[in-house]
Amino acid sequence: MDVIFEPQTGLPFSIEVGFFDTVLEIKEKVEKYHGIPKNKQTLVFHGQLLQDEKDVGSCEILQNSRIQLLVAREPDEKPDQVLVEETPPSKKVQLNIKIPSNQTPVPLEMDMSDTVLHLKEKIHEIEPFPVKRLVLQSNGAELQDHRSLHDCELKYNSEINVIVKPSPTGSAGFKKLRVIVLTRCGTKRIPIEVNPSDNVEVLRKELNILQHQMQFQLPQEGYFFIHKQDVMDDDRSFRWHRVKQGSPIELPNDATVKDLKEAVNDMFESCPVENQEMAFNGRVLQDTTKLATCRVINNSEISIRILFTVVIVGKNRRYEVRAHENSYVGDLKQKLSEDYGLDITNMRLQMGPESYLRDDTLLWANRISSGTRVHIAEEYFAASS
Image (tube, rainbow, N blue to C red; front, side, top):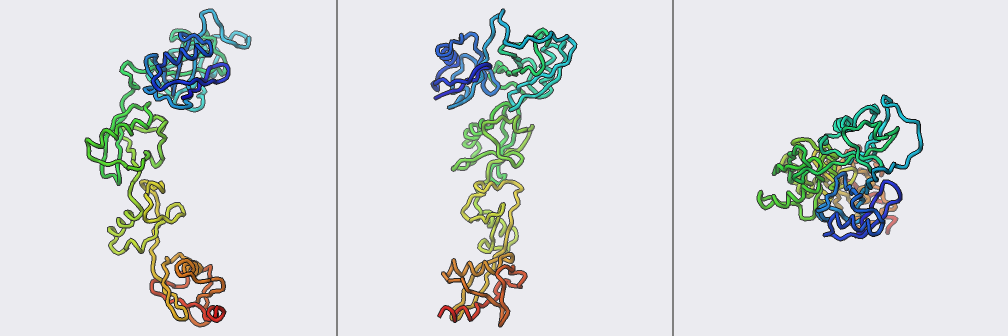
């Protein structure tokens, strides 16, 4: 598969890597094809330093993943920069902080006499990364804690890359988050511990293991996660989704619309399934459709319309059509066409002699309800014969 490398200077380039290639082997390929010594390379993926002994699979690198390539300078090498007047140590400066969890750089005002360590502490106030695990780089060079920003030759709008070193145990090293996964209709509450920096996809691995131990079923057709009524992105971290300690995360409901109608009937005892029509976001829901497919989640508002039968009397036949109080008279004619194949081009409906019904009026406005008889005007049959 191809992986895209983004150097700090120059254009991005791609290199083919294997699923079992180690990070060190990837660096060797970069050195072979682009002449960058492997010992000068630092590879960063999703804000995490890639360790030489890790392989592509364990780093979760996929086709067209974008890896940041940082190249260390020689001790006597200066970064390319425009010659500017030396900045006094006490002068304020705005830096653009590139934090892994933010898509756009965060502006941060500092004093040029501040140390790099103080800058790390300020970054910690923005995002709760442990200060000891932060690595700051500018123009490919690591900034040392004891040096001042002036000594690091930073200037207005300098970009600071923030890299989070892995913890010694290989986990994110933050305080664990305890989230509660809610299965269908909240029938099971499954507590799972994750790292704030983990991507949401780790929940899938945990649930696959736990479903056998805790005897619950995951949706067979696939599923997604929902937090605060928003669908979660598997490739984003829990921190990015602002998941807090004890937050509930829902699995989509694998119940069908018919299941929901049956639940409504159980609650009200006089609302048979066949008499219900449900609508969500302006669309009528079909009985066999799964609620998850319609993006119906907790606290979604679903409209329920109670259907009834309207009897329409023709010349030699009675027709029964289903409707609700907010149906239009024109809808009755459309049902006659769909259910019975009648030509409705010149058809008019009436409640009694000379009492014609306008197509654009509602049934309730015409006092049409269950069992009401509506007649097809006689001139319709005269024209048809």
